[in-house]
Image (cartoon, rainbow, N blue to C red; front, side):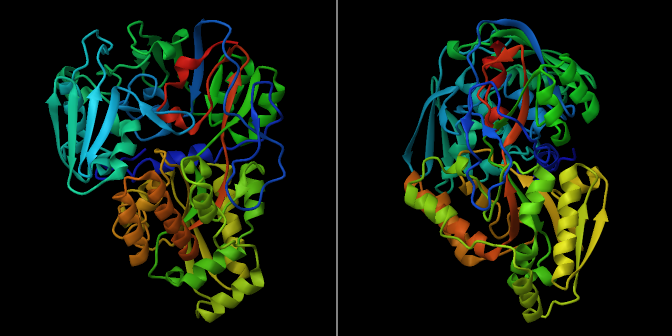
Length: 555
């Protein structure tokens, strides 16, 4: 997919839409699972499904297994890895200072501990005894080089914004690295559990140069698997790294292969035949036949994603909050959930899911998810709001692409909603590449009022979502601005106390719920297929950063 270097929020979103649009229907599975829904607010679906957070422990090691990728990774360079294909591979090969766990908590990773001795300082004690895949020891100097690389404007990392408030990074002890920030920044440390916190050998970075992270240059990290072979357009093979430092996450398979299968039918047939053992983000229309194939189980993992309409033009009719509210009230969101997501999940009125509110108090969660405006469908009231705003007959431009069934369902539902309240809606269909540009190129959004996204969070803090909606942020695609919101979010960024920060974030969620800079549609789980030969992983959106493949062994 197209990448722009200035901002972490720009380039990953199309793949999020493609992948998470493929939510599927499932019968009760035979693996250990937790019953329930995603837990987001709104109207629950009638579909019978289970949220799976763990699977049975392996009975032993396995020689090899294969997972399908719906697209080839654009890169395995941690500085640019932003998409599902990139990160689900990289998560098993490279590691970060902190570890983002399947329950979306952070724990020590390559940093055995961290501290925040004052509001402008983060200190990381680097773990001893860790080696890169070439056998050389990891040092504090490697950590500094890896982090400084993301800050380098010549590199143009997709993760640059994690470091936007960093003043300096320095080695301050034999195995100690100190980061100084210009302002108090709680979100910097949260980002150390993802690609922004990856540590690579400084020598490898220097030697590989521009070939680092591609099929020629490869990578040399510290994870439970090393990169064995990358056959461009065909497959990526990883092999167990026997020198891995964390015995609890020693890989249970000697090797694993990612089969690159862009065609959805071919991918499903490979799973049905048993030639592929699993896949994240399975095609929605194939879940029943996959479950009935007897080759494995369709599972649902906890997710941080919500399906939304991005309001990308506030100079037109949607600049009036009454029109945004009217469109939200006119949308048949239960119908969208049923048609696009097969009824798996819930209609939601907010832009986050409970998975990123794990440490918040019950009172804070109530404020964030219950003490909000609930947008029930009411076409008559919505039409009246449009009339009051003087927007009757005004035109909106909605951009979509031939990417998945959910794209079609959402675009047609938006058309019907707009027409029902006296608005005109023009649907413009573009290529997937042109659609990608909406998230990275302001000129691509000229004259565009709305487009669809499925937006996930990559840190355990809901504040990540609202940081991107501040005035002037790269991912604030419509240029929405609200001083009270900005003040609250900025205060939250500088608040190190988790409870206090969550309370402020709940206020930001309430404002976004009322002002509707984006229109929330639904929240659903992350679907995957796990073949009958394998078991052991803890399904979660954290598969983008956690070494999930190391958990897999013989069922």
